[in-house]
Image (tube, rainbow, N blue to C red; front, side):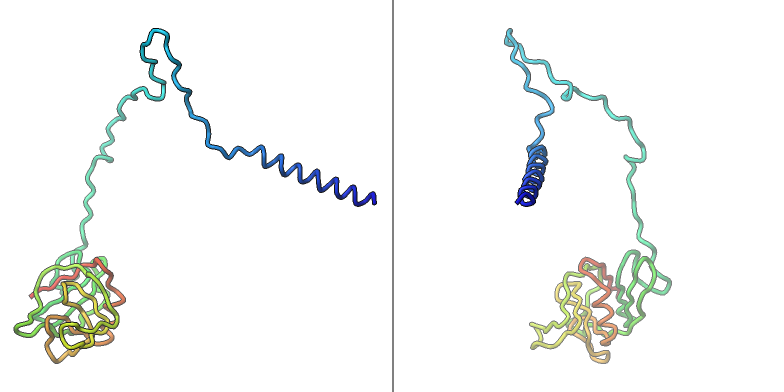
Length: 193
């Protein structure tokens, strides 16, 4: 019987130690760092606390005020697009390239592009969206695998390399898959005539 009492006493003491340990931890928000200003007998406003005093201005640091200009790397030799593009399309040469940090990462890859009446417009565009298994809503649910849309309804996608498109950039399956995996929404695509 005595053993039970000792164990019970030890357990009770351990429980009290835990409770007292928990009770000493202050989890409430800390008190305000300054007490409220005491009222003055003359009705004059109380003096401002030291924390609200105006500090002198910080000295000028020239480097902090300098404008940092990041320049895009120049295009690789033989690529007709400007600096800073992620994909370049040369309509007259029927070629395209993927570019990263000023170096060609893929290409030149052969392409076909828009036919008369549906020409692919030149310009600089941003990738707007991607769809791995897109079907054309405009052309009888025509399959457009690995679509990367960069100018409204115009996209890179897998398509015929012998037949002209309705404005899209047709790529081989391997190239279309590579472009789909390499380009992200917001990347820059330049189309040159």
